Length: 307
Image 1 (tube, helix red, strand yellow):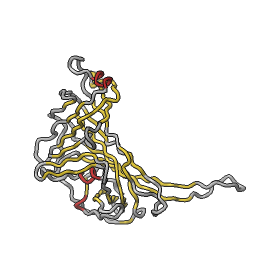
Image 2 (tube, helix red, strand yellow):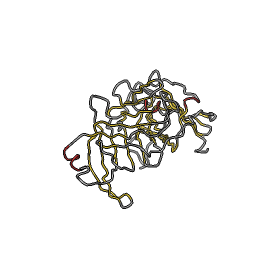
Image 3 (cartoon, helix red, strand yellow):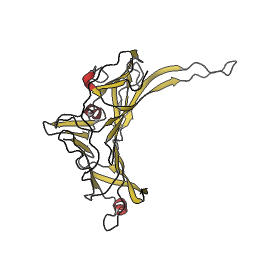
Image 4 (spheres, helix red, strand yellow):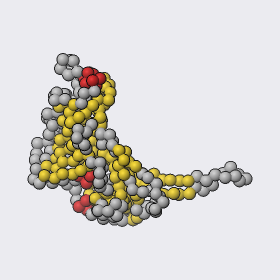
């Protein structure tokens, strides 16, 4: 079985843990995919004439699926990008402005869940009620990437199923360059911005389900990451004073991309520094800021807009 001959299809569930039956039009273009199981194996102990173990009792399992996606638009302004369904499965609210933009922001209520079909060159694994975590990586001169990890209920271990012929969005992602990046309104020179939603995935036990686990929930989040501005004179930008004074500031990538329908922008209006490490970027001193994104008026600590 070839790793290259695989496909992932994802669709929003109308009812939690009810198969949404994603089709080829629900395929997402992925790379670096990895599947794993989190099983509850109950050890049995007791006295007997030998020191050999007793057979364990299988108490159910959950599945995790991780993969990377390109950060890009749909090719049409106001139409959700291919990864939109995945962002919604990570606790983000989608707001569409027809013909103009699609905006994603974190939400603390009514989190949506996904049915995910994972085809492996002749086999199919199904995950129901999946919710997950997303992290964004924007590096100078490279196209942006989003890394996803979803946790869900496996619907039967696996079955033989022919690989479908999925339909992917043909839009080519823009590179992270020629942007008006700002940090506290200062045009900082950076090489990379990393940001994760910081979702804490709760997997409560339940006696009412076949696998012994209840509804998977996003119990908590902490949006944050790192950014590495070039070190400058204190008179230009005093990063240490920002840290020690507890000052909140904004991070704005600026608009990435130049073609309508394939532009994105990440904004965080109230970031605070958690720590600073001094690094070397090819002989140039940098201050890597470890940051947390704070909300201003509720569920607004981060937004990603596609235009």
